[in-house]
Image (cartoon, rainbow, N blue to C red; front, side, top):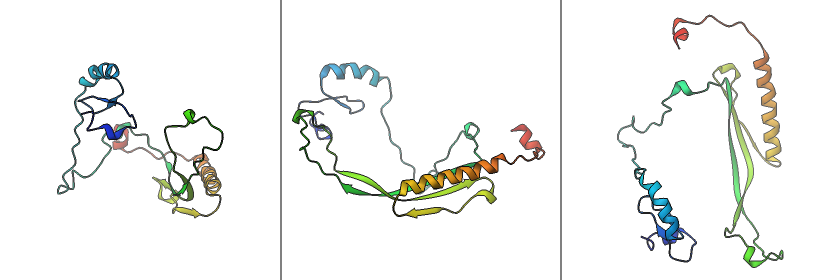
Length: 170
């Protein structure tokens, strides 16, 4: 088993593998400490939904009563591209102190989209999209402006409408 999963780690010596979860360890002593805890849990079993049954292919939040209803929320998405990172060891760092992780690329944000969603249709907005310089600065400005608009909406007190019989029992 050790040779089978050896390619998953950077460890250059013999690895000891748990037969229950396939996690590899650097020493037999650590594996022996892990196995009793791992045995208590059932093995992982991945089951995929049947693509021929559309009702099985829907992910749904079951405990709706535990949900916290919000009058507003923002759905945001960022776009980025990968740019190479220069990996020079010319900074005088000790060779032994070099990290085991070798960074190759860095995500550079190049745009965003933000959409205000509300259970009240009159307060829902169309998605705002931006691509250009100073993306994060523009994003923070947009979020802060939206925050002020939402605060002014929530500050407007109105009389409560009478509850229906169904709402009384909920």
